[in-house]
Length: 133
Image (cartoon, rainbow, N blue to C red):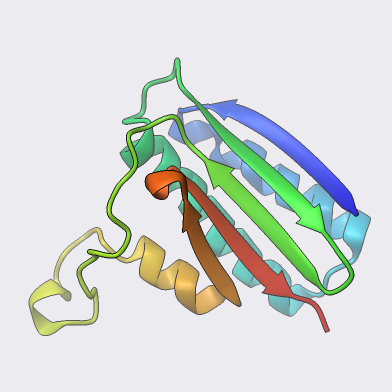
C-alpha cells in the first residue's frame, strides 16, 4: 500500500500545490483521465473548504492531504485544524430556494464525483474514495 502526504498553510493560493500533488499522483499511479477530472475537482474543492471554512483562512493553521492507494481504490484524506461542522445538517443546493446562492455546492459536488465520501472527527477530516476498474 502506497501513502503520500503533504501539509499546506491555509492560503487559497496553495490550491496550486494540491493540483501538482494530484498531477504527480496521476503520473505515479497511472489512473485514467475520467477519474482524474473527478479527483481534481473533488479534492481541490475539499481542500478549499478546509482552508476557508475549517481553518477560516488562518495561515498559521495547516491542511493535511494524504493519498492512499490499495488494490482497487484511491483514498484522499483532507484534514483541517478547525472546530468541525455538522455534516448531517447540510442544505440541499438543488432546492429551489438555494439555486441562486453562491456557496453550498462543494460537498454536494464531492458526493457526486467520488464513489464514497466519509466524514470523521466532527467533520474536520474527510475521506474521498475513488474506485479503480
